[in-house]
Image 1: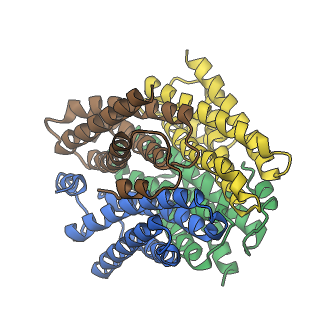
Image 2: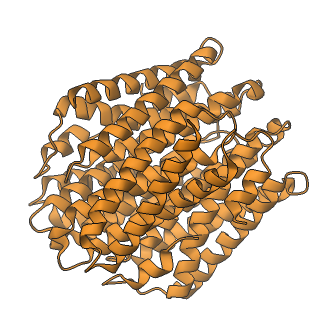
Length: 134
Length: 134
Length: 134
Length: 134
């Protein structure tokens, strides 16, 4: 989806993270942010919008947290492990919560099914990167 | 089919824009934002960073403007043509300026070559969507 | 609210814009973004949420556009008039549309009354800065 | 009373957090984000820009993390303690790291002195809110 991998190759002073896991995580964050923005908006248009309040709220939060995480991970210059980890942990928690909520609606709202999948993918990518940073 | 396209299909009350052009533009915005964040950061790590100030500044701006545009276009509920157009025009201008600046450095900085390409793609996607909205 | 004015004073190579109008506009963008995020969220909690769809959508857009505009205006290094203007025009249009929509709900939702005011202030600040850039 | 506080008063279903600590933290996040964007940009314009790489990088990260945190905290509908805490912890760590780096340059760059102060204020506001959430 993005040129993240190609751009990482061109950096003069890249950070120390495993490149494959890093690219997977950046792309998952970017894609999940877009999906969460779309899901919150699709929820809002549903007839049962009053049942979707929690889903909308968590999707909006998740879009914001994923975007910030994607930006922090994209930056290689003067990489700082402590702050990267803390933001990854927040992103993992956020994606987990959003996936769980979307799961409740996945059977009757296809956008929630897709968004759950995207959140699970991003949660896992954060986990793997965190595991590699131990 | 990408997630942006799949999610658009599931919306109960989609906006009136041509779906192909819309998805192209959303994806170009999201991808260009990530590339511009990466290019600004790669510029910062170069030995000739003092020559890269304008490139860094425009890439940071372009990342912010592309992200906002990607979000506005992602939303389908109660689509508003006037404000969407204005943001598309800003995104087109921003991508053009950023591409021109990256072009000056494309021969010696591969990240600028890639980022120029991404900005040109996004500029064109904005143009095409604006053309279709006339 | 912000340290925007103090920080502007410390910049070694500030842009050419009138400082008073610039600070007013940066602060209006930052404040309006926060108000729009709050109003979209307060709308979502209302019993008449189905009537608030357009307000939620425009508030979410306005928060994104104001944040991007506030960042673009904050940057002084290698100021670029053309792209700054285009983003200011989008922000002006966005704040206008959002204020108009909030106005419809201002009598029964106090958050819409406050948000309308914030949007009008930001619209005006954008107008004044654009006027000064002619 | 600020707009953030006034808007909080109008919410039909506010979250459970101490209102004073919450408003302080939202305002600190919003203000710190703007200061960090300004400081990164002022660093970039300095003659010793090569010495400022780490400061620029952390300020850019801090702006992104503070903005996301400010948005998550602003939302009251269906408040989720676990994800709010994780993002607050990330914001606290980010502000701490950015303050420490700005501190190294505070004597010769006034923007770093101001930005350090803003980061310390935001770090403390996050700490206090986290303390109250135990």
